[in-house]
Image (cartoon, rainbow, N blue to C red; front, side, top):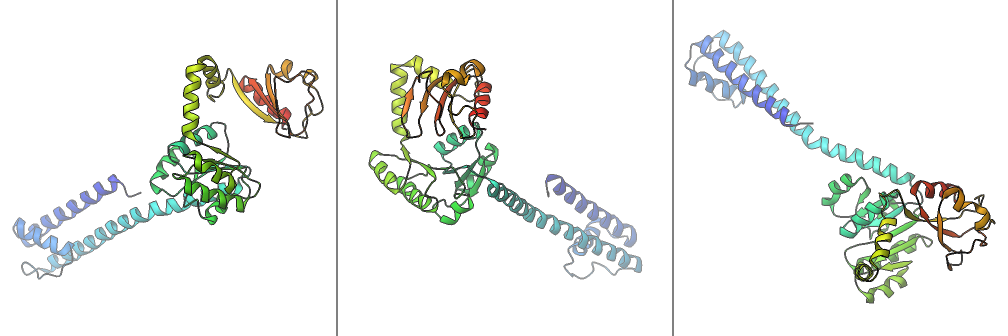
Length: 332
């Protein structure tokens, strides 16, 4: 990379060549310092001015040396400038190709459209899971921020079908629309649903009037940050202990207690066993607080006689390490 050290070296070489030329003409032709430096300058820059004084044979040989030194110096400067201009572009191209290869290999990942305040916080939570995500945003000023956050990104308009295809929407598990306006989110949901009829789509809505439009466009669920924020504030006032517990359970960097949902796979060894004989409480030291059945019904505080079935989703509370062990058993 053409950095500050290269610039310092170029300045040093220029001064050195001027000094050598000035001293050389003073020694060979017996000129004064100004005439010698002037002759050196017009020789270095190859401007083609006439000689200051008549040159001797040795003076002409020395001028040839100064000419070659000047041409070599300016070729070095030009090469450095070209390198400085192209190297960053080449690095960006190689980096983009690498990201595209990573995206091409992803499956069951999450696509987040929009990396504003909400999108960035959302991605931070997903990455901490960890979950594979692809962020789409057309603001090039966010590139350095996304690099710093360590997310896989595409700088383009998420409203274009080609951009969503490039993000792997046909293989993605979910798409989250958090663009700046509701109109953009509605159009994005329509486009995404047409490209992948089975994908889970969550969309942000700024007001209640837009929620029905987003649902009609194909959103699986619609969330309003303002409503969620107001509800959270009310719960903190009315039920501070409960909200503190939930905060602790949903904070990924805490290891002593977490709340997690785990879908039961048909290959699980616990299929068709009731909770009493599953050994979940004894083996993993976890508490099953609810089970979501395959038909969508939610069963709170399930009986120990409840039989685990394919398609159920277990909601458990306990240590992170034990939750991970249970996930390997329920979804091998």
